[in-house]
Image (cartoon, rainbow, N blue to C red; front, side):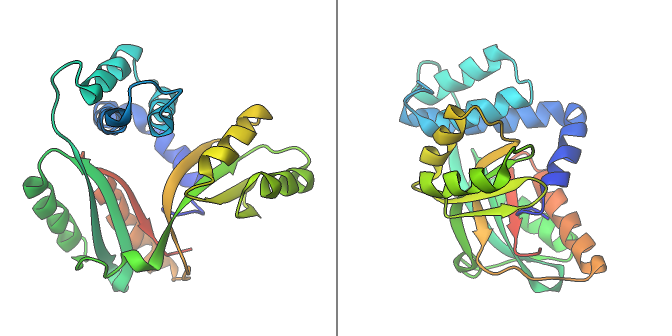
Length: 235
């Protein structure tokens, strides 16, 4: 599911990335542009560095990245984007957080509502769901040598928790995410996932049928050009 036994899903998404490359690059451009509003130098702007790193992983051309940065800094004219968050429910009342970037909230909101309704979900009121999640850094290391020792080092470096999940999953507070990421870079340890996410405070187990219906609505929402991520509390 989207939030955090999702490492297999990430690998599947990379496999279909070519088929959706145009949409994928559009999403990366939006993320880079909005991050660059706080400065166009990735070495000084951590949010921008993360956005650029993600775009490079999906082989976004350098020219596209530079153009998106310049739109954010105002060097060239661009669209005015804003962050959006929707709260809702997947089939069976499973809470979901929907996070994205749009240039027209009046267009995006009814489209998100329609996707939810079509797939057996519903849009919720503000803070109907958000209180169930925490803003955290999430880093996954697929190939980690001497895991026990590394786990202790990560905790010393500022990690909040480290779990063995197909490698190591590292959770940090929002504030310590950059510090822990830099520690891993210093150690030259590669990560296959590194983002600020909304992590459910309490997870729930559901049967396979409901899990499939929740995943279906998450996939439908993430196919929308304005939606970046959808989070649930399903294990």
